[in-house]
Length: 168
Image (cartoon, rainbow, N blue to C red; front, side):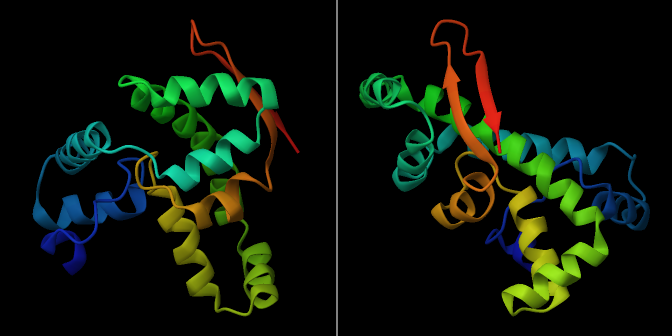
């Protein structure tokens, strides 16, 4: 909480009812006030940021080689940041769906924590931090840990931005 107030950490995603519902009740606000503010703050941060170049490189490795060259040229254009955000954002949404289901499986999460050599709470916090990520804040470690193990390949129609994502 102190990190959010000081500005070192962005607010969690508005869909995180586990956090906003108790805060709203405690502060005696309307139930949509905090999620609306969080949405606005996150939208402003996304508009300003461009995905990390290492993240883009890892994401491009998951698509066909001929498509990689086309996309690299498009990313180099002045308007390429929007396309980068669309691609990384959609792949991120797919991975976050898997992580959401993993978060609900407490026994599986405890076993994964033991396997990784960390505590249950550390593993849970790592998943929650990933759920709060967006295209601009995604890290290369997030890609290695959450995107690459779940996505085999993907392709995008550059005219409509419709994506075909093949899962493992």
